Every structure is written in structure tokens, then in C-alpha cells.
Length: 268
Image 1 (cartoon, rainbow, N blue to C red):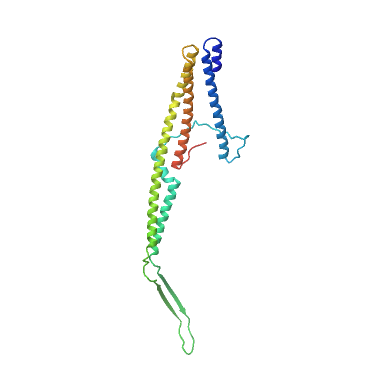
Image 2 (image 1 turned 45 degrees about the vertical axis):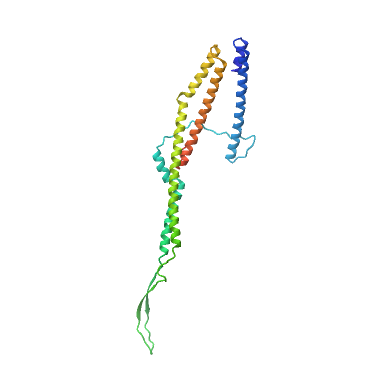
């Protein structure tokens, strides 16, 4: 724009003020480019740290791929069903609940004393003692051992097991509610991000480009001011920045939805 305005000024079509204005805008946008390059370099260095690679000035790791994701359509009811059945924290809570129930049954069983029963069969051979000879014979014996007292009246272990079971049930119910809330929130954000990105793909980008092209054409013909062109350029820049942000939001909310439900269907 600045070079084109310089040629128009040399031809006597526009004033020097327009040329200076375009030069100022060009330098401001160049500073924004420098700032973006610095942020990009910092992000690439941080990426190397996340990968476990040493950060060196001569080594930058550039990610490959695109944010043009082929997202999936989900049903909230199925996501909730899957999350309640497969979330790791819910599985752990269910196992804790089962363990607490088994400990309670064990505590109840320990209150009943153990009764030992024994049955024996002994065979005695023939005794040929001249003084007291005895024939061979069998003896059958039965014994029962019953400890006293007949019942364990100490209820501390039983009450502790009962409280642990109740606590495990409450923890499971709380975890279940939290999972449902997280899935619903993640699903709502995911749906909103899809609708926002659809606004740009349905013509918002092309419309902003057409506005800039039209303003530029009118300016060159003397039917529009330089300020109109600059405003159209700023609008187009803002639209593209918002578009890239919408792409990032969709990718982020998709990952959050996968994490909340405990599944992973994203192919990188």
C-alpha cells in the first residue's frame, strides 16, 4: 500500500499526507510482524522443552499439521453413558466402594467367634498281655471348641467399617456428579466452538476480503479515502485473527471433551 501510494503521489493523484499515513501504517504493521515472530520463536523454544529436548538457539522444533480438523458429531447422552462407565476416577471410586463393602462384611463376620469341630477315629490293636489281654477295637471321638464370650461385643471395628462404606458411597456419588458436570460443560463449549468457526467458514472471511478489495479499487479511482482502505485492512486482519483463534478454540474444546469423557478419538 505504501509503495502504491508513493507512485500515486508521484503521479499527482493523492496528497503527501496520504503517503505519510500509509507509511506510518506500514511501519506499525511491520512492528506487529516483529512481535509475532518473537512470540513464535518463544513458543517453539517452549515446544522443545515440552518434548524434553534441550533449548538451543540453533535448534527449533516446528510442529506439523493443520488446525483444519475434521471434528466429530456427538450425542450428549452417549457421552455421559461412556464417561460414567469408563472414567478412571469413577472406576477407582467404584472399586473403593466395593472394597468398603467387603470390609464391612468382614467386620460383621469377625463379631461371631470361631467354633472348632473335630472328629477322630482311632484303632487299637490286640494286646496279648497275659495279665490284661485286650482285643482290638476302634474308637470314634468328637470334640467341639467354643471360645468365651460367645459374641464379640466390641463394635468399634464394625462402626468404623460402616462409616467407611458410607463415605465410599458418598465419594462415588460426588465423583459421578462431577463427571456429569464436566462432560456437560465440555460438550457445551465444544458445540459453541463449532458454531463460532462455522461463521467464518460460511462466508465471513470472503466477505471481509471483498470489502478490502472494493475499498482499494474505489481508493485508486478516487471514490474512497485512505482511511476507508486502512479500516478495511484492519477489519480483515481482525477477522483472520479471530478465525485462527476460533480454530484453536475448537481444537482445545475437542481435547477437553475427550478428556472429560475418558475417550480418545483424535488422530494427529
